[in-house]
Image 1 (cartoon, helix red, strand yellow):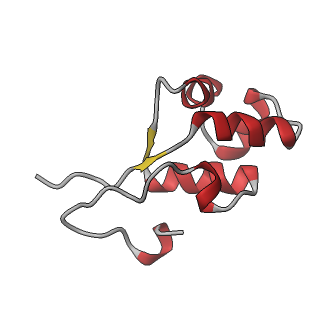
Image 2 (cartoon, one colour; image 1 turned 180 degrees about the vertical axis):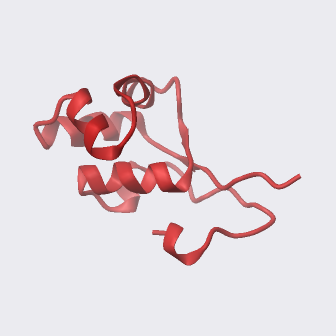
Image 3 (cartoon, one colour; image 1 turned 60 degrees about the vertical axis):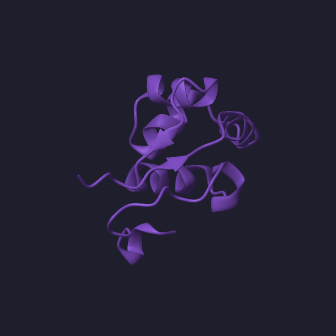
Length: 87
């Protein structure tokens, strides 16, 4: 069975970047197109894995490089993600 690629994120880094940007969890959530609860779960570590599109939107909202909020490389899958989702 094909498992989707996920990105393991660093909740502490997400919180630090959000606060440095002067954003509330609600503002970041709105900009990234996710729920404030999801942002909270990511920051506290109760959720660590993100799908590529959601991860990319969060990174763009925070305006940070990939290496800043990601813990490990993408998990291997049977099929690699399309090039536009690898950033």
